[in-house]
Image (cartoon, rainbow, N blue to C red; front, top):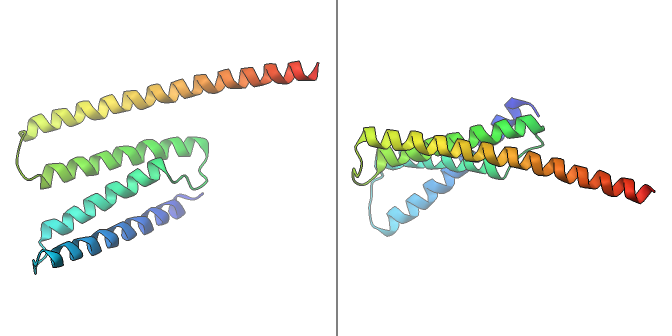
Length: 145
């Protein structure tokens, strides 16, 4: 699959998520009798829709990608979703629990640990696949005899 087609699917899903979140925000604002939409709400909609789209493409949609492209897409999409969520928390949290330097160091540690865990999961998955293929070949050889 070409990258342009893959990105067009992502853009479509992003726009659908933005539209859905905008409708939900309008309903909530209408029910709470608030007549204005703040600019920060629109920024939040964009960040959350971006995070949702990246999580969706990391965990659900593969769109017939090759093995290497799928792995790269998984890691990049998951990292981008984390970045969007951290930006949302950083810019739009209701109160400052952490100072920005401490939040940045926590973010770096979280992303490093997540990267190490996903790498370990990938290596473990490869080892399990090798073992399964070995067992299948042994089964096939015993069946042919």
